[in-house]
Image (cartoon, rainbow, N blue to C red; front, side):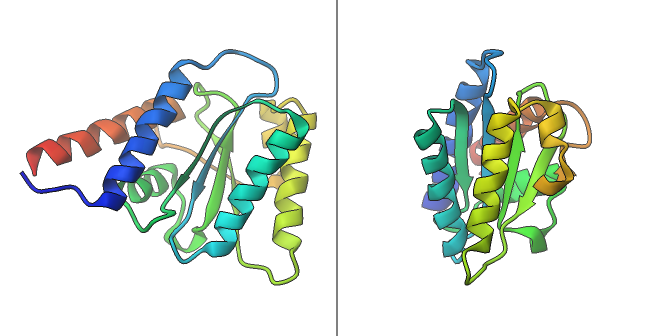
Amino acid sequence: MAEESRVDAHDRNKLDRMLQDLSAETDAHGVLHAMFLVTREHEHAHDVFRRFRQVYEDTSSPFHSLTIFGQHGVSRAGQLIAQGLGVPEDQIPSLVLFSSHHDSRAALIGLPASEDGSLERGVNAAVEQVIEGGCTAAALDNPGLGTECGPSQGSIDSFLRATLGRLNADLEAA
């Protein structure tokens, strides 16, 4: 059996933990799920992730799951998630937001580098808007938040579970 790379193991474990969080999801108002799809080279996106987390902590808003894939390098999990949600490779780094594990669509916010801090301000404004809007589907449909993405069939939860199953099967077969 081939050994899984540290990066692949790290992101596969993150996906597993995220799915555990999704399993425990309640219908609480204002819950938000966020996946950052990045590479190690996208330091600015790592900064946006940290700021995103800080906005939640500062506003005492409940985020049910906040996960970053690719932070330590390109992983099979990150690649499969991006492909399965229809996120083009040239749109990474990106932020994927959804309000329920039952959702089949998510908001996709590109995270291009910006020297003037406009990206961070834009993401902060988007997060605050979603929080104030109660993280409803209508809030995520706001065109100011970016474009739409999602699996070709089923819910985001079922897609992520299938992705983890594929990763685990590939690991066992190696």
